[in-house]
Image (tube, rainbow, N blue to C red; front, side, top):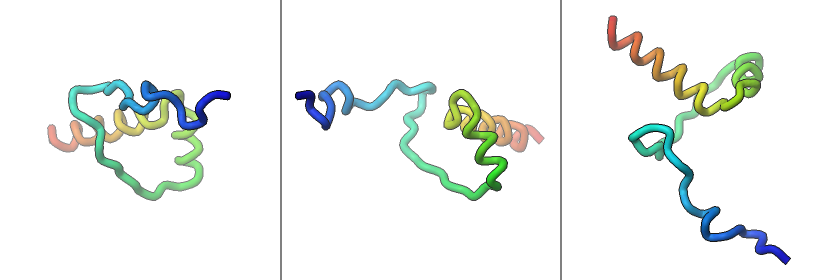
Length: 62
């Protein structure tokens, strides 16, 4: 019978997509239609990170 808690390899952190570690969480409210639109993306967390980064870049350049 397999171990239900997984193997030690499964407990290691995943690969980072950038050079900074992603250790912080951010939570905010959205409309139900926005939530569904984000959830329908291929990679919702990365979609949100890119959208936030784009907005931050635009606001810092103006």
